Image (cartoon, rainbow, N blue to C red; front, side, top):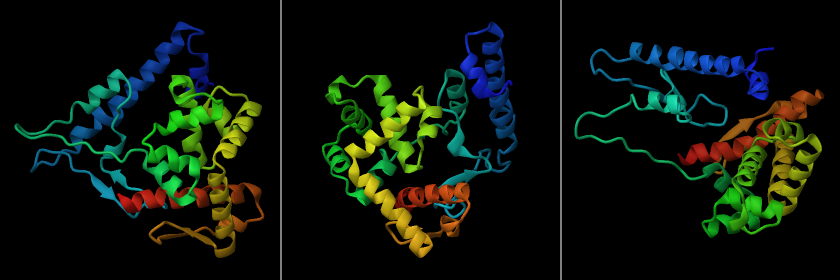
Length: 249
């Protein structure tokens, strides 16, 4: 197989693998951005105008189309060069704004988990705080690798990540991933209670809702098919968090 995930695992095994990965990256940047964006320039304004969509995604999360300006590369030296093509007229500025870890803040509010609330209340680095909890060390002793792992778990919980999913996303074994997730819920029991109550609500009512009352109906939650049911459970726990973030934005 020459799939990206396979080649990533084999990186360094042979010089040609690095060249294949680099070629694919450059080819994607060229076709997706360098060739495509100039064709989308408005002939009257000389600018690219995207459409921001508030009602197209199931969770209500904002999306962008024609072109998707939420997908402009930010990682990697070559990717950042594409981003640098976006400039302002003379004497104008580009303004960037970001809600800091909004999904996790919403999760803390919805779950009322004491550990998460304390971390955000004290303006801590939530990923470092989670790593400190999971590894039993002070936040100042958290290494970048441990923080990265905690970040994967923090966001994975919102999406209903399983031990298999965590194994695939990290270098942990399946057993280690299962232990890590179990440890996470021991440290943040309010999150587990919230996720379970959300799934119960979905089974009983057939829907879940955001903090502001926007509903998503999930009839598949009671499917006899295990795969369909588990996918619906992941939708159920994700929507109130992502959807509330979208409502705020």
